[in-house]
Amino acid sequence: MGWAIALHGGAGDIPLSLPPERRQPREAALRHCLQVGVDSLKAQKSPLDVVELVVRELENNPHFNAGRGSVLTTEGTIEMEACIMDGKTKKCGAVSGLTTVVNAISLARVVMEKTPHIYLAFDGAEKFAREQGLETVESSHFITPENIERLKHAKEANRVQIDYTQPVEKETPTVDGDSQIGTVGCVAVDNDGNLAAATSTGGLVNKMVGRIGDTPIIGAGTYANNLCAVSATGKGEAIIRGTVARDVAALMEFKGLSLKEAAAYVVEECVPRGNAGLVAVSAKGELTMAFNTTGMFRAAATEDGYTEIAIWP
Amino acid sequence: MGGWAIAVHGGAGVDPNLPQQRQEEAKQLLNRCLNLGIDALRSNLSAVDVVELVVRELETDPVFNSGRGSALTAKGTVEMESSIMDGRGRRCGAVSGLTTVKNPVSLARLVMERSPHSYLAFAGAEDFARQQGVEVVDNEYFITEENVGMLKLAKEANTIMFDYRVPEAVGLETCSAVVESPILMNGLPISVYAPETVGCVVVDSQGRCAAATSTGGLLNKMSGRIGDSPLIGAGTYASNLCGVSCTGEGEAIIRGTLAREVAAVMEYKGLGLQEAVDFVIKERLDEGKAGLIAVSNKGEVAWGFNTTGMFRGCATEDGFMEVGIWD
Image (cartoon, each protein chain N blue to C red):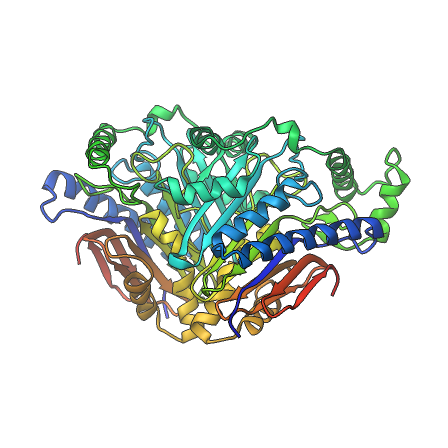
Protein backbone atom coordinates (compact mmCIF):
# COMPACT_ATOMS: atom_id res chain seq x y z
CA MET A 1 0.00 0.00 0.00
CA GLY A 2 2.19 2.85 1.19
CA TRP A 3 1.65 6.29 2.60
CA ALA A 4 0.25 9.26 0.70
CA ILE A 5 0.03 12.96 1.38
CA ALA A 6 -1.58 15.91 -0.36
CA LEU A 7 -1.67 19.55 0.59
CA HIS A 8 -3.13 22.73 -0.80
CA GLY A 9 -2.54 26.45 -0.47
CA GLY A 10 -5.93 27.55 -1.74
CA ALA A 11 -8.16 27.22 -4.79
CA GLY A 12 -9.36 30.25 -6.67
CA ASP A 13 -9.25 32.44 -9.68
CA ILE A 14 -5.48 32.25 -9.89
CA PRO A 15 -4.58 34.07 -13.10
CA LEU A 16 -2.48 32.15 -15.60
CA SER A 17 -0.56 35.37 -15.96
CA LEU A 18 0.56 35.21 -12.32
CA PRO A 19 3.98 36.91 -12.44
CA PRO A 20 7.04 34.82 -11.48
CA GLU A 21 7.68 36.85 -8.35
CA ARG A 22 4.29 35.79 -7.04
CA ARG A 23 4.36 32.26 -8.38
CA GLN A 24 7.84 31.12 -7.40
CA PRO A 25 7.74 31.77 -3.65
CA ARG A 26 4.49 29.83 -3.46
CA GLU A 27 5.83 26.90 -5.48
CA ALA A 28 8.89 26.87 -3.25
CA ALA A 29 6.69 26.90 -0.17
CA LEU A 30 4.59 24.01 -1.48
CA ARG A 31 7.75 22.06 -2.20
CA HIS A 32 9.10 22.74 1.27
CA CYS A 33 5.87 21.82 3.04
CA LEU A 34 5.53 18.66 1.00
CA GLN A 35 9.03 17.67 2.02
CA VAL A 36 8.21 18.29 5.67
CA GLY A 37 5.23 15.99 5.32
CA VAL A 38 7.08 13.31 3.41
CA ASP A 39 9.96 13.28 5.88
CA SER A 40 7.50 12.90 8.78
CA LEU A 41 5.71 10.03 7.11
CA LYS A 42 9.03 8.34 6.44
CA ALA A 43 9.86 8.83 10.11
CA GLN A 44 6.64 6.95 10.94
CA LYS A 45 4.84 9.90 12.47
CA SER A 46 1.07 9.46 12.68
CA PRO A 47 -1.01 11.12 9.97
CA LEU A 48 -2.53 13.31 12.68
CA ASP A 49 0.93 14.59 13.61
CA VAL A 50 1.85 14.97 9.95
CA VAL A 51 -1.13 17.06 8.92
CA GLU A 52 -0.70 19.33 11.92
CA LEU A 53 2.98 19.80 11.18
CA VAL A 54 2.43 20.58 7.51
CA VAL A 55 -0.40 23.00 8.17
CA ARG A 56 1.76 24.78 10.76
CA GLU A 57 4.36 25.28 8.04
CA LEU A 58 1.73 26.62 5.66
CA GLU A 59 0.35 28.92 8.37
CA ASN A 60 3.81 30.30 9.06
CA ASN A 61 4.37 31.04 5.39
CA PRO A 62 3.07 34.54 4.54
CA HIS A 63 2.18 33.64 0.96
CA PHE A 64 -0.94 31.69 1.84
CA ASN A 65 -4.20 32.70 3.39
CA ALA A 66 -3.69 31.22 6.86
CA GLY A 67 -1.78 32.27 9.94
CA ARG A 68 0.69 34.86 8.81
CA GLY A 69 -0.60 36.08 5.45
CA SER A 70 -4.25 35.71 6.41
CA VAL A 71 -6.65 37.93 4.52
CA LEU A 72 -8.26 40.78 6.43
CA THR A 73 -11.79 41.38 7.66
CA THR A 74 -13.69 44.43 6.53
CA GLU A 75 -12.22 46.26 9.51
CA GLY A 76 -8.66 45.38 8.55
CA THR A 77 -8.34 42.86 11.36
CA ILE A 78 -7.34 39.20 11.51
CA GLU A 79 -9.74 36.37 12.40
CA MET A 80 -8.32 32.90 11.85
CA GLU A 81 -9.95 29.51 12.00
CA ALA A 82 -8.83 25.91 11.72
CA CYS A 83 -9.94 22.34 12.08
CA ILE A 84 -8.34 18.93 12.45
CA MET A 85 -9.88 15.46 12.30
CA ASP A 86 -8.61 11.97 12.99
CA GLY A 87 -10.16 9.43 10.64
CA LYS A 88 -9.84 6.37 12.84
CA THR A 89 -11.63 7.77 15.88
CA LYS A 90 -13.47 10.62 14.13
CA LYS A 91 -12.26 12.83 16.94
CA CYS A 92 -12.05 16.43 15.84
CA GLY A 93 -11.16 19.90 17.00
CA ALA A 94 -12.01 23.32 15.57
CA VAL A 95 -11.36 26.96 16.40
CA SER A 96 -12.61 30.28 15.01
CA GLY A 97 -12.09 33.97 15.59
CA LEU A 98 -8.45 33.77 16.61
CA THR A 99 -6.50 37.01 16.58
CA THR A 100 -3.21 36.27 18.34
CA VAL A 101 -2.60 32.54 18.20
CA VAL A 102 0.39 31.83 15.98
CA ASN A 103 -0.78 28.37 14.90
CA ALA A 104 -4.52 27.97 14.81
CA ILE A 105 -4.27 24.32 13.77
CA SER A 106 -2.38 23.48 16.94
CA LEU A 107 -5.05 25.10 19.06
CA ALA A 108 -7.65 23.06 17.21
CA ARG A 109 -5.70 19.94 18.11
CA VAL A 110 -5.52 20.94 21.76
CA VAL A 111 -9.28 21.53 21.80
CA MET A 112 -9.70 18.02 20.41
CA GLU A 113 -7.34 16.41 22.90
CA LYS A 114 -7.67 18.44 26.06
CA THR A 115 -11.33 19.45 26.25
CA PRO A 116 -14.62 17.56 26.17
CA HIS A 117 -15.62 19.90 23.36
CA ILE A 118 -15.00 20.06 19.64
CA TYR A 119 -15.22 23.72 18.79
CA LEU A 120 -14.13 26.87 20.63
CA ALA A 121 -14.32 30.37 19.24
CA PHE A 122 -13.41 34.01 19.71
CA ASP A 123 -12.66 35.20 23.24
CA GLY A 124 -13.19 31.76 24.74
CA ALA A 125 -10.73 30.24 22.30
CA GLU A 126 -8.13 32.96 22.84
CA LYS A 127 -8.42 32.54 26.60
CA PHE A 128 -8.03 28.77 26.27
CA ALA A 129 -4.93 29.26 24.12
CA ARG A 130 -3.29 31.26 26.87
CA GLU A 131 -4.29 28.76 29.53
CA GLN A 132 -2.70 26.02 27.45
CA GLY A 133 0.47 28.03 26.88
CA LEU A 134 0.23 28.19 23.11
CA GLU A 135 2.36 30.75 21.33
CA THR A 136 0.57 34.05 20.86
CA VAL A 137 1.71 37.33 19.29
CA GLU A 138 0.41 40.79 18.48
CA SER A 139 -2.21 40.54 15.76
CA SER A 140 -0.10 42.76 13.50
CA HIS A 141 2.30 39.83 13.10
CA PHE A 142 -0.16 38.15 10.74
CA ILE A 143 -0.84 41.17 8.53
CA THR A 144 1.10 41.48 5.26
CA PRO A 145 1.23 44.46 2.86
CA GLU A 146 -0.19 42.20 0.13
CA ASN A 147 -3.30 41.64 2.18
CA ILE A 148 -3.75 45.29 2.97
CA GLU A 149 -3.77 45.81 -0.82
CA ARG A 150 -6.22 42.96 -1.32
CA LEU A 151 -8.62 44.46 1.17
CA LYS A 152 -8.39 47.82 -0.55
CA HIS A 153 -9.19 46.25 -3.94
CA ALA A 154 -12.07 44.25 -2.50
CA LYS A 155 -13.60 47.34 -0.97
CA GLU A 156 -13.26 49.22 -4.25
CA ALA A 157 -14.90 46.39 -6.14
CA ASN A 158 -17.75 46.29 -3.62
CA ARG A 159 -18.27 49.98 -3.98
CA VAL A 160 -18.78 49.47 -7.70
CA GLN A 161 -21.18 46.66 -6.87
CA ILE A 162 -23.30 48.86 -4.67
CA ASP A 163 -23.37 51.63 -7.30
CA TYR A 164 -25.16 49.30 -9.65
CA THR A 165 -27.70 48.59 -6.89
CA GLN A 166 -27.41 44.86 -7.24
CA PRO A 167 -29.08 42.69 -4.58
CA VAL A 168 -26.70 41.46 -1.92
CA GLU A 169 -24.56 38.91 -3.68
CA LYS A 170 -22.83 36.00 -2.09
CA GLU A 171 -20.02 36.48 -4.60
CA THR A 172 -17.10 38.74 -3.86
CA PRO A 173 -16.03 40.19 -7.18
CA THR A 174 -12.32 39.73 -7.54
CA VAL A 175 -9.83 42.07 -9.07
CA ASP A 176 -6.72 40.17 -8.26
CA GLY A 177 -8.03 36.64 -7.95
CA ASP A 178 -5.44 34.61 -6.16
CA SER A 179 -6.00 33.97 -2.48
CA GLN A 180 -9.25 35.93 -2.41
CA ILE A 181 -10.75 32.64 -1.38
CA GLY A 182 -7.78 30.68 -0.19
CA THR A 183 -7.12 28.37 2.72
CA VAL A 184 -4.44 25.82 3.44
CA GLY A 185 -4.88 22.18 4.19
CA CYS A 186 -3.29 18.79 4.33
CA VAL A 187 -4.48 15.19 4.27
CA ALA A 188 -2.37 12.14 4.93
CA VAL A 189 -2.62 8.36 5.19
CA ASP A 190 0.00 5.98 6.55
CA ASN A 191 0.83 2.40 5.70
CA ASP A 192 -1.86 1.07 8.02
CA GLY A 193 -4.64 3.11 6.48
CA ASN A 194 -4.86 5.67 9.30
CA LEU A 195 -6.19 8.93 7.95
CA ALA A 196 -6.17 12.57 9.04
CA ALA A 197 -7.18 15.95 7.65
CA ALA A 198 -6.37 19.51 8.69
CA THR A 199 -7.42 22.88 7.30
CA SER A 200 -6.61 26.45 8.33
CA THR A 201 -7.54 29.88 7.01
CA GLY A 202 -7.84 33.61 7.47
CA GLY A 203 -11.20 33.35 5.72
CA LEU A 204 -12.71 35.56 3.05
CA VAL A 205 -11.17 38.92 2.23
CA ASN A 206 -13.32 41.85 3.42
CA LYS A 207 -15.51 39.45 5.39
CA MET A 208 -17.81 40.77 8.05
CA VAL A 209 -16.33 40.62 11.52
CA GLY A 210 -17.46 37.36 13.09
CA ARG A 211 -17.99 35.57 9.80
CA ILE A 212 -17.24 31.86 9.98
CA GLY A 213 -16.50 29.90 6.80
CA ASP A 214 -16.36 26.24 5.90
CA THR A 215 -12.94 25.46 7.32
CA PRO A 216 -13.94 24.79 10.95
CA ILE A 217 -17.18 23.06 10.04
CA ILE A 218 -16.80 19.30 10.18
CA GLY A 219 -18.16 17.84 6.97
CA ALA A 220 -17.83 21.07 5.04
CA GLY A 221 -14.17 22.10 4.83
CA THR A 222 -12.65 19.22 6.76
CA TYR A 223 -13.51 15.56 7.25
CA ALA A 224 -11.88 12.22 7.90
CA ASN A 225 -13.22 8.78 8.66
CA ASN A 226 -11.95 5.28 8.04
CA LEU A 227 -12.42 5.62 4.27
CA CYS A 228 -10.79 8.90 3.40
CA ALA A 229 -9.56 12.29 4.56
CA VAL A 230 -10.57 15.50 2.83
CA SER A 231 -9.61 19.17 3.06
CA ALA A 232 -11.52 21.68 0.96
CA THR A 233 -10.87 25.24 -0.12
CA GLY A 234 -12.80 27.92 -1.96
CA LYS A 235 -15.94 29.89 -1.33
CA GLY A 236 -16.89 28.96 2.21
CA GLU A 237 -20.60 29.57 1.84
CA ALA A 238 -20.80 27.17 -1.12
CA ILE A 239 -18.72 24.50 0.62
CA ILE A 240 -20.97 24.62 3.66
CA ARG A 241 -24.13 24.22 1.58
CA GLY A 242 -22.53 21.42 -0.37
CA THR A 243 -21.17 19.62 2.72
CA VAL A 244 -18.20 19.01 0.46
CA ALA A 245 -15.78 17.07 2.62
CA ARG A 246 -18.44 14.75 4.02
CA ASP A 247 -19.95 14.10 0.63
CA VAL A 248 -16.72 12.76 -0.82
CA ALA A 249 -16.71 10.12 1.92
CA ALA A 250 -20.47 9.55 1.65
CA LEU A 251 -20.27 8.88 -2.09
CA MET A 252 -17.52 6.35 -1.51
CA GLU A 253 -19.46 4.65 1.24
CA PHE A 254 -23.00 4.75 -0.12
CA LYS A 255 -22.48 4.68 -3.85
CA GLY A 256 -19.24 2.77 -3.97
CA LEU A 257 -17.46 5.47 -5.96
CA SER A 258 -13.69 5.51 -5.93
CA LEU A 259 -11.89 8.38 -4.22
CA LYS A 260 -11.18 10.04 -7.54
CA GLU A 261 -14.74 9.63 -8.82
CA ALA A 262 -16.23 10.89 -5.57
CA ALA A 263 -14.01 13.98 -5.49
CA ALA A 264 -14.71 14.77 -9.14
CA TYR A 265 -18.46 14.35 -8.62
CA VAL A 266 -18.49 16.68 -5.63
CA VAL A 267 -16.58 19.52 -7.30
CA GLU A 268 -18.71 19.19 -10.40
CA GLU A 269 -22.15 18.67 -8.90
CA CYS A 270 -22.26 19.89 -5.31
CA VAL A 271 -20.78 23.36 -5.66
CA PRO A 272 -21.08 26.00 -8.39
CA ARG A 273 -18.26 26.40 -10.90
CA GLY A 274 -15.37 28.51 -9.68
CA ASN A 275 -16.15 27.90 -6.06
CA ALA A 276 -14.16 25.01 -4.68
CA GLY A 277 -11.28 22.58 -4.70
CA LEU A 278 -10.15 19.80 -2.44
CA VAL A 279 -7.39 17.35 -1.71
CA ALA A 280 -8.15 13.87 -0.48
CA VAL A 281 -6.50 10.55 0.31
CA SER A 282 -8.08 7.16 0.86
CA ALA A 283 -7.39 4.36 3.33
CA LYS A 284 -5.95 2.40 0.42
CA GLY A 285 -3.24 4.99 -0.17
CA GLU A 286 -4.87 6.66 -3.19
CA LEU A 287 -4.86 10.39 -3.61
CA THR A 288 -6.75 12.97 -5.61
CA MET A 289 -6.77 16.72 -6.04
CA ALA A 290 -9.86 18.17 -7.70
CA PHE A 291 -11.02 21.72 -8.29
CA ASN A 292 -13.51 23.66 -10.39
CA THR A 293 -11.64 26.96 -10.12
CA THR A 294 -8.99 28.35 -12.44
CA GLY A 295 -6.31 26.89 -10.24
CA MET A 296 -5.39 25.45 -6.87
CA PHE A 297 -1.96 25.70 -5.22
CA ARG A 298 -1.22 22.07 -4.44
CA ALA A 299 1.39 19.40 -3.86
CA ALA A 300 1.23 15.66 -3.34
CA ALA A 301 3.40 12.60 -2.96
CA THR A 302 3.03 8.87 -2.48
CA GLU A 303 5.42 6.30 -1.10
CA ASP A 304 6.02 4.73 -4.50
CA GLY A 305 7.77 7.90 -5.63
CA TYR A 306 5.00 9.96 -7.25
CA THR A 307 5.39 13.70 -6.63
CA GLU A 308 3.46 16.67 -7.96
CA ILE A 309 3.56 20.40 -7.34
CA ALA A 310 1.14 22.43 -9.38
CA ILE A 311 -1.13 25.43 -9.63
CA TRP A 312 -3.26 25.06 -12.76
CA PRO A 313 -4.93 21.94 -14.24
CA MET B 1 -48.55 10.64 0.29
CA GLY B 2 -47.89 14.32 -0.28
CA GLY B 3 -49.29 17.14 1.76
CA TRP B 4 -47.58 19.08 4.48
CA ALA B 5 -45.93 17.68 7.58
CA ILE B 6 -44.29 19.17 10.63
CA ALA B 7 -42.24 17.96 13.57
CA VAL B 8 -40.87 19.81 16.58
CA HIS B 9 -38.54 18.83 19.39
CA GLY B 10 -37.49 20.25 22.72
CA GLY B 11 -34.35 18.22 23.30
CA ALA B 12 -33.24 14.62 23.73
CA GLY B 13 -32.01 13.09 26.97
CA VAL B 14 -34.79 13.44 29.51
CA ASP B 15 -34.57 12.53 33.21
CA PRO B 16 -36.74 9.42 33.68
CA ASN B 17 -37.71 10.89 37.06
CA LEU B 18 -38.91 14.16 35.62
CA PRO B 19 -41.95 15.20 37.69
CA GLN B 20 -45.29 14.63 35.99
CA GLN B 21 -46.13 18.32 36.12
CA ARG B 22 -42.99 19.21 34.15
CA GLN B 23 -43.80 16.55 31.59
CA GLU B 24 -47.27 18.00 31.13
CA GLU B 25 -45.91 21.52 30.80
CA ALA B 26 -43.52 20.37 28.09
CA LYS B 27 -46.21 18.48 26.18
CA GLN B 28 -48.51 21.48 26.30
CA LEU B 29 -45.83 23.70 24.79
CA LEU B 30 -45.09 21.15 22.07
CA ASN B 31 -48.81 20.99 21.31
CA ARG B 32 -49.09 24.72 21.13
CA CYS B 33 -46.12 24.98 18.79
CA LEU B 34 -47.43 22.24 16.55
CA ASN B 35 -50.74 24.04 16.27
CA LEU B 36 -48.99 27.28 15.47
CA GLY B 37 -47.12 25.52 12.70
CA ILE B 38 -50.23 23.80 11.41
CA ASP B 39 -52.14 27.09 11.20
CA ALA B 40 -49.25 28.63 9.32
CA LEU B 41 -49.10 25.69 6.91
CA ARG B 42 -52.83 25.93 6.30
CA SER B 43 -52.30 29.62 5.49
CA ASN B 44 -49.80 28.53 2.87
CA LEU B 45 -46.72 29.96 4.51
CA SER B 46 -43.53 28.46 3.11
CA ALA B 47 -41.61 25.79 5.00
CA VAL B 48 -38.80 28.16 5.94
CA ASP B 49 -41.29 30.71 7.32
CA VAL B 50 -42.98 28.02 9.37
CA VAL B 51 -39.83 26.62 10.94
CA GLU B 52 -38.73 30.11 11.91
CA LEU B 53 -42.13 30.91 13.41
CA VAL B 54 -42.26 27.74 15.46
CA VAL B 55 -38.70 27.95 16.72
CA ARG B 56 -39.29 31.57 17.77
CA GLU B 57 -42.13 30.31 19.93
CA LEU B 58 -39.92 27.62 21.44
CA GLU B 59 -37.18 30.19 22.10
CA THR B 60 -39.53 32.65 23.76
CA ASP B 61 -41.04 30.12 26.13
CA PRO B 62 -38.64 29.33 28.99
CA VAL B 63 -39.52 25.65 29.26
CA PHE B 64 -36.82 24.37 26.88
CA ASN B 65 -33.12 25.08 26.51
CA SER B 66 -33.08 27.87 23.94
CA GLY B 67 -33.60 31.63 23.98
CA ARG B 68 -35.16 32.39 27.33
CA GLY B 69 -34.52 29.35 29.50
CA SER B 70 -31.19 28.57 27.88
CA ALA B 71 -28.74 26.48 29.89
CA LEU B 72 -25.99 28.60 31.43
CA THR B 73 -22.29 28.67 30.58
CA ALA B 74 -19.68 28.02 33.26
CA LYS B 75 -19.64 31.77 33.86
CA GLY B 76 -23.37 31.85 34.59
CA THR B 77 -24.21 33.71 31.36
CA VAL B 78 -26.19 32.72 28.29
CA GLU B 79 -24.58 32.16 24.85
CA MET B 80 -27.08 31.13 22.22
CA GLU B 81 -26.71 29.64 18.77
CA SER B 82 -29.00 28.65 15.96
CA SER B 83 -29.17 27.67 12.32
CA ILE B 84 -31.84 27.52 9.65
CA MET B 85 -31.80 25.88 6.25
CA ASP B 86 -34.13 26.12 3.29
CA GLY B 87 -34.10 22.88 1.33
CA ARG B 88 -34.91 24.77 -1.83
CA GLY B 89 -31.49 25.91 -2.99
CA ARG B 90 -29.93 24.67 0.25
CA ARG B 91 -29.65 28.23 1.48
CA CYS B 92 -28.57 28.47 5.08
CA GLY B 93 -27.84 30.85 7.90
CA ALA B 94 -26.30 30.34 11.33
CA VAL B 95 -25.31 32.29 14.42
CA SER B 96 -23.31 31.57 17.58
CA GLY B 97 -22.32 33.38 20.73
CA LEU B 98 -25.43 35.53 20.99
CA THR B 99 -25.97 37.21 24.32
CA THR B 100 -28.69 39.80 23.73
CA VAL B 101 -30.66 38.72 20.68
CA LYS B 102 -34.17 37.76 21.74
CA ASN B 103 -34.72 35.28 18.88
CA PRO B 104 -31.54 33.69 17.57
CA VAL B 105 -33.34 31.76 14.83
CA SER B 106 -34.53 35.01 13.29
CA LEU B 107 -31.02 36.39 13.26
CA ALA B 108 -29.84 33.19 11.59
CA ARG B 109 -32.48 33.79 8.94
CA LEU B 110 -31.26 37.34 8.41
CA VAL B 111 -27.70 36.08 8.01
CA MET B 112 -29.05 33.80 5.28
CA GLU B 113 -31.05 36.51 3.54
CA ARG B 114 -29.40 39.83 4.25
CA SER B 115 -25.71 39.12 4.54
CA PRO B 116 -23.18 37.80 2.01
CA HIS B 117 -22.29 35.03 4.48
CA SER B 118 -23.72 31.88 6.04
CA TYR B 119 -22.51 32.04 9.60
CA LEU B 120 -21.81 34.94 11.96
CA ALA B 121 -20.70 34.67 15.55
CA PHE B 122 -20.06 36.53 18.79
CA ALA B 123 -19.39 40.27 18.58
CA GLY B 124 -19.79 40.30 14.80
CA ALA B 125 -23.17 38.61 15.05
CA GLU B 126 -24.31 40.96 17.79
CA ASP B 127 -23.27 43.96 15.64
CA PHE B 128 -25.20 42.56 12.69
CA ALA B 129 -28.24 42.15 14.93
CA ARG B 130 -28.16 45.83 15.79
CA GLN B 131 -27.63 46.81 12.18
CA GLN B 132 -30.68 44.78 11.26
CA GLY B 133 -32.72 46.24 14.08
CA VAL B 134 -33.76 42.93 15.64
CA GLU B 135 -35.06 42.91 19.17
CA VAL B 136 -32.26 42.85 21.76
CA VAL B 137 -32.47 42.57 25.54
CA ASP B 138 -30.11 42.26 28.50
CA ASN B 139 -28.48 38.88 28.99
CA GLU B 140 -30.39 38.57 32.29
CA TYR B 141 -33.64 38.24 30.35
CA PHE B 142 -32.64 34.77 29.21
CA ILE B 143 -31.55 33.52 32.63
CA THR B 144 -34.13 31.64 34.69
CA GLU B 145 -33.88 30.83 38.37
CA GLU B 146 -34.21 27.19 37.55
CA ASN B 147 -31.18 27.27 35.29
CA VAL B 148 -29.13 29.07 37.91
CA GLY B 149 -29.95 26.15 40.19
CA MET B 150 -29.11 23.61 37.47
CA LEU B 151 -25.72 25.22 36.89
CA LYS B 152 -24.92 24.89 40.56
CA LEU B 153 -25.86 21.21 40.49
CA ALA B 154 -23.79 20.66 37.37
CA LYS B 155 -20.73 22.19 38.97
CA GLU B 156 -21.26 20.03 42.05
CA ALA B 157 -21.74 16.95 39.90
CA ASN B 158 -18.51 17.68 38.08
CA THR B 159 -16.75 17.96 41.41
CA ILE B 160 -18.22 14.67 42.52
CA MET B 161 -17.35 12.95 39.32
CA PHE B 162 -13.79 14.10 39.17
CA ASP B 163 -13.13 14.03 42.88
CA TYR B 164 -13.20 10.47 44.17
CA ARG B 165 -13.50 11.41 47.87
CA VAL B 166 -16.95 11.04 49.38
CA PRO B 167 -18.52 14.47 49.17
CA GLU B 168 -19.44 15.98 52.52
CA ALA B 169 -20.68 19.48 51.97
CA VAL B 170 -22.80 18.61 48.96
CA GLY B 171 -26.52 18.14 49.60
CA LEU B 172 -27.80 14.61 49.97
CA GLU B 173 -30.21 15.05 47.10
CA THR B 174 -27.40 15.70 44.69
CA CYS B 175 -25.49 12.74 46.05
CA SER B 176 -28.36 10.37 45.65
CA ALA B 177 -29.18 11.82 42.27
CA VAL B 178 -25.76 10.83 41.06
CA VAL B 179 -26.02 7.38 42.62
CA GLU B 180 -29.58 6.68 41.49
CA SER B 181 -29.21 8.09 37.99
CA PRO B 182 -26.10 6.56 36.54
CA ILE B 183 -27.38 7.63 33.12
CA LEU B 184 -24.99 10.26 31.85
CA MET B 185 -25.44 12.72 29.01
CA ASN B 186 -22.51 14.83 27.96
CA GLY B 187 -20.72 13.90 31.14
CA LEU B 188 -23.54 15.01 33.43
CA PRO B 189 -25.98 12.86 35.41
CA ILE B 190 -29.34 12.81 33.65
CA SER B 191 -31.03 14.38 36.67
CA VAL B 192 -28.88 17.44 36.18
CA TYR B 193 -28.45 17.49 32.42
CA ALA B 194 -30.50 20.05 30.49
CA PRO B 195 -31.75 18.46 27.26
CA GLU B 196 -30.27 20.69 24.65
CA THR B 197 -31.90 22.48 21.86
CA VAL B 198 -35.23 23.00 20.20
CA GLY B 199 -35.97 22.41 16.57
CA CYS B 200 -38.56 22.26 13.88
CA VAL B 201 -38.70 20.61 10.47
CA VAL B 202 -41.39 21.21 7.92
CA VAL B 203 -42.40 20.17 4.45
CA ASP B 204 -45.02 22.48 3.02
CA SER B 205 -47.81 21.70 0.57
CA GLN B 206 -45.44 22.43 -2.30
CA GLY B 207 -43.00 19.80 -1.14
CA ARG B 208 -40.37 22.27 0.06
CA CYS B 209 -38.45 21.19 3.12
CA ALA B 210 -36.86 23.35 5.79
CA ALA B 211 -35.23 22.89 9.17
CA ALA B 212 -34.24 25.11 12.07
CA THR B 213 -32.50 24.47 15.38
CA SER B 214 -31.78 26.74 18.34
CA THR B 215 -30.08 26.31 21.69
CA GLY B 216 -28.35 27.74 24.71
CA GLY B 217 -26.00 24.79 24.42
CA LEU B 218 -24.38 22.51 26.95
CA LEU B 219 -24.97 23.32 30.59
CA ASN B 220 -21.76 24.57 32.26
CA LYS B 221 -19.97 24.84 28.90
CA MET B 222 -16.77 26.83 28.47
CA SER B 223 -17.51 30.30 27.15
CA GLY B 224 -16.90 30.20 23.40
CA ARG B 225 -17.89 26.57 23.03
CA ILE B 226 -19.86 25.93 19.88
CA GLY B 227 -22.04 22.81 19.62
CA ASP B 228 -23.82 21.11 16.76
CA SER B 229 -26.90 23.34 16.51
CA PRO B 230 -25.41 26.07 14.32
CA LEU B 231 -23.38 23.66 12.20
CA ILE B 232 -24.95 22.87 8.88
CA GLY B 233 -24.79 19.15 8.30
CA ALA B 234 -24.49 18.36 11.98
CA GLY B 235 -27.46 19.81 13.87
CA THR B 236 -29.44 21.10 10.94
CA TYR B 237 -29.85 20.21 7.30
CA ALA B 238 -32.38 20.53 4.53
CA SER B 239 -32.30 19.65 0.86
CA ASN B 240 -34.82 18.89 -1.84
CA LEU B 241 -35.42 15.53 -0.23
CA CYS B 242 -35.79 16.27 3.47
CA GLY B 243 -35.37 18.51 6.50
CA VAL B 244 -33.60 17.38 9.68
CA SER B 245 -32.98 18.83 13.15
CA CYS B 246 -30.89 17.05 15.78
CA THR B 247 -30.44 17.24 19.53
CA GLY B 248 -28.30 15.52 22.12
CA GLU B 249 -24.58 15.25 22.67
CA GLY B 250 -23.21 17.94 20.40
CA GLU B 251 -19.87 16.30 19.91
CA ALA B 252 -21.47 13.03 18.78
CA ILE B 253 -23.75 14.86 16.37
CA ILE B 254 -20.84 16.81 14.87
CA ARG B 255 -18.63 13.78 14.50
CA GLY B 256 -21.47 11.85 12.91
CA THR B 257 -22.54 14.79 10.69
CA LEU B 258 -25.95 13.52 11.70
CA ALA B 259 -28.38 15.79 9.87
CA ARG B 260 -26.53 15.49 6.58
CA GLU B 261 -26.27 11.75 7.06
CA VAL B 262 -30.04 11.28 6.97
CA ALA B 263 -30.21 13.16 3.68
CA ALA B 264 -27.13 11.43 2.28
CA VAL B 265 -28.43 7.91 2.77
CA MET B 266 -31.71 8.95 1.20
CA GLU B 267 -29.93 10.60 -1.71
CA TYR B 268 -27.08 8.16 -2.30
CA LYS B 269 -28.55 4.91 -1.06
CA GLY B 270 -32.18 5.50 -1.90
CA LEU B 271 -33.43 4.83 1.64
CA GLY B 272 -36.86 6.10 2.66
CA LEU B 273 -37.18 8.66 5.43
CA GLN B 274 -37.87 6.33 8.37
CA GLU B 275 -35.23 3.85 7.20
CA ALA B 276 -32.72 6.67 6.93
CA VAL B 277 -33.53 7.98 10.40
CA ASP B 278 -33.30 4.50 11.92
CA PHE B 279 -30.04 3.78 10.13
CA VAL B 280 -28.44 6.99 11.30
CA ILE B 281 -29.51 6.62 14.93
CA LYS B 282 -28.41 3.01 15.04
CA GLU B 283 -25.19 3.18 13.05
CA ARG B 284 -23.82 6.69 13.21
CA LEU B 285 -23.72 7.46 16.90
CA ASP B 286 -21.25 4.90 18.27
CA GLU B 287 -21.29 5.66 22.01
CA GLY B 288 -22.93 9.01 21.47
CA LYS B 289 -26.45 9.84 22.56
CA ALA B 290 -28.76 11.86 20.36
CA GLY B 291 -32.14 12.20 18.69
CA LEU B 292 -33.55 13.85 15.62
CA ILE B 293 -36.73 14.78 13.79
CA ALA B 294 -37.12 14.73 10.03
CA VAL B 295 -39.59 15.31 7.22
CA SER B 296 -39.42 14.26 3.58
CA ASN B 297 -40.57 16.02 0.45
CA LYS B 298 -43.24 13.34 0.17
CA GLY B 299 -45.02 14.61 3.24
CA GLU B 300 -43.67 12.00 5.64
CA VAL B 301 -42.48 12.69 9.15
CA ALA B 302 -40.13 10.61 11.31
CA TRP B 303 -38.10 10.79 14.49
CA GLY B 304 -35.58 8.64 16.28
CA PHE B 305 -33.41 8.74 19.38
CA ASN B 306 -31.13 6.52 21.41
CA THR B 307 -31.43 8.63 24.55
CA THR B 308 -33.82 8.26 27.46
CA GLY B 309 -36.63 10.18 25.87
CA MET B 310 -36.92 13.14 23.54
CA PHE B 311 -39.50 15.92 23.84
CA ARG B 312 -41.22 15.85 20.46
CA GLY B 313 -44.38 16.33 18.48
CA CYS B 314 -45.43 15.80 14.89
CA ALA B 315 -48.39 16.25 12.63
CA THR B 316 -49.29 15.57 9.01
CA GLU B 317 -51.91 16.99 6.72
CA ASP B 318 -54.02 13.83 6.79
CA GLY B 319 -54.82 14.48 10.44
CA PHE B 320 -52.13 12.51 12.28
CA MET B 321 -50.89 14.31 15.39
CA GLU B 322 -48.77 13.11 18.29
CA VAL B 323 -46.80 14.56 21.18
CA GLY B 324 -44.49 12.43 23.25
CA ILE B 325 -41.47 12.16 25.50
CA TRP B 326 -40.64 8.49 25.97
CA ASP B 327 -40.18 5.57 23.63
